[in-house]
Image (cartoon, rainbow, N blue to C red; front, side, top):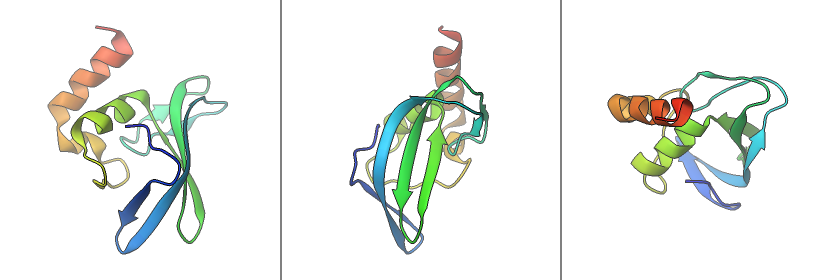
Length: 102
């Protein structure tokens, strides 16, 4: 579900526009916006830059990016660290598959 530049999302009554979304190798540790787990430095993650009243950058771990692309439809919203709650069993299965290569 890699977002494209110009995609929009609504959070409350604000609309945010995606300025940039890309796969990166992190230089420092981050926290995944989707699940709240740590993304260690040197790991791959999806970096998204959004603008509404301000410019915000969020990171998604590979599990959450893949999970969001499977479970969510275009325009669906989720709050910070809540992505696994959409389907905890599927999220855990995808985590094992991606992180442990099974």
